[in-house]
Image (cartoon, rainbow, N blue to C red; front, side):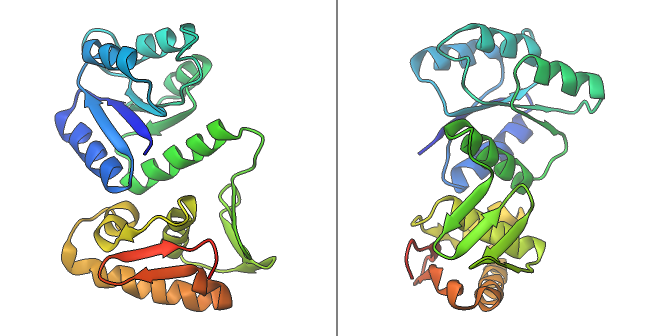
Length: 226
């Protein structure tokens, strides 16, 4: 399970981010200021850091600069989060070594997509953003899906659902977790929406739709083989 640290002083925002991370299969830990964050970094290095710029005391830019100066932490991916949206702030963060940038308010699905893309690049920087399972190929950079080389037209939610399943093949995603990750909601009564989209997605993928397996009473997973 990938450990992700979230340094964010707004309790409501931090809580929502951690709730989403944990629901999507990550191990999220949150910090309101840099002191406890540095103590946690010394004890355990995360796979990725979500870092707000506007923090009490030591701000996000200062934290990022320290991370990049320490060899043990220099390669840890960092996604900056801030209410600021100026070009200067984006350039400043990226120049200091940030891997990506999210401007508030941002959707939780967008956040998860950015996190997974950054983690993929960090694990294999030479690879394009392509996920391949059997005849299924998803190109996240081009936002396309193909089966045996033939492109398949999907709705945005169908694409997001398939992307999530392909990111962690073999992992069982509960319907509630899929709702939180893809639809940004945790209303249990809407789980039928997940089932309807899975049916539609399977139909559009043709025989490759068999790669989406049903775990009775739980949810769905992407099988390595049908």
